[in-house]
Amino acid sequence: MKHPLHPALVHFPIACWSLATLADIVGQWSTRWPFWQWSVGMLVVGCAAGLAAAGAGLLDFLKLSPEHPATADAYRHMGVALTAWSLYAFSLLLRMDGMQPAPPNGLALALSGLGFIALCTTGWLGGKLVYVYGVGAVGPRS
Image 1 (tube, one colour):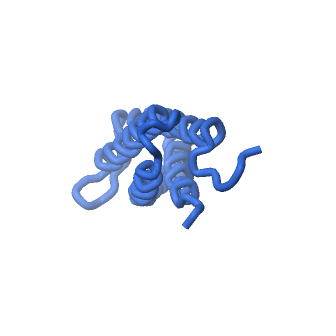
Image 2 (cartoon, rainbow, N blue to C red; image 1 turned 90 degrees about the vertical axis):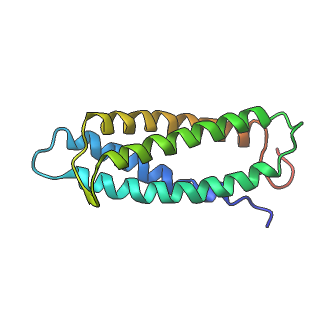
């Protein structure tokens, strides 16, 4: 397979975590609808999809030679992506009361906010890997 799988899979955690963060924000002003329930669902799917994306990213990373100029940024991308996953996973755990979802507390909301910042940062680093270094590009670059 010539085309890397990681770029195709990252759309799912990005979308789910972004929507979860948006639901948290809207939920702070809405007393009529329990947006936190949507947020919990999106966090679950995002964390599961994030594991798949991380696995595919690791396989792509292993194809990169240690001497490649993108290696340092690839390590940064991996570290920030794992940080984002951890922040969202901990936010999800704080929203659980046993096996039942519960409304988020302030710490859970803060972790989601920090997770979103990490998500944006790792996306920027991933874009740098592709568009500056050509990592994962097939064929000549123009």
